Amino acid sequence: MSKRKTIEIDATGQAPGRLATKIATILMGKHKVKFTPHIDYGDKVVITNYDKIVFTGKKLDQKLYRHHSNHPGGLKEVPAKKIMAEKPQEAIRSAVLKMLPKNKLRDQRMIRLHFKK
Image 1 (cartoon, rainbow, N blue to C red):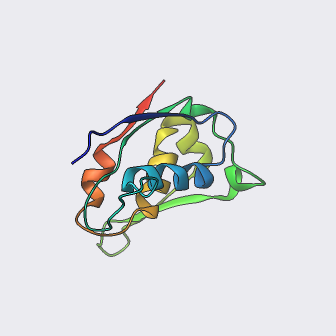
Image 2 (spheres, rainbow, N blue to C red; image 1 turned 60 degrees about the vertical axis):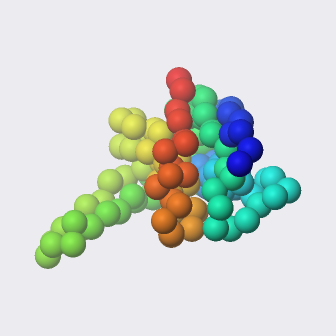
Image 3 (cartoon, helix red, strand yellow; image 1 turned 180 degrees about the vertical axis):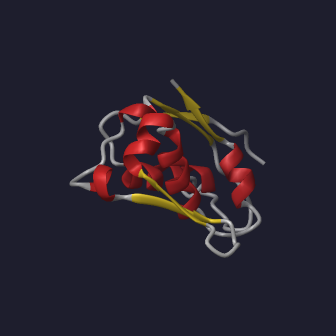
């Protein structure tokens, strides 16, 4: 297996979804010539200036991040404005998590995603 490189990405002025596609591609290893879907050849990704991402249109006011506890009445909704004020890295982390394939390699890939101020 080849050595993993560390790729640093500056998030200044980028939309979370567009940024997440680049990150997911690197974490999966699709940018490499010897990409194989069932083998994890991806690199480490370090995101800098994650608090400077930009939502287009009215998404900052209208977008909701939802999760459910699987109990009746367990739906939690948090607006994007609150996420950006408290934990801006969570906007990128959730976008990347949803773009990675839902398989056994996803947790290993997400461990290689780091945030640096």
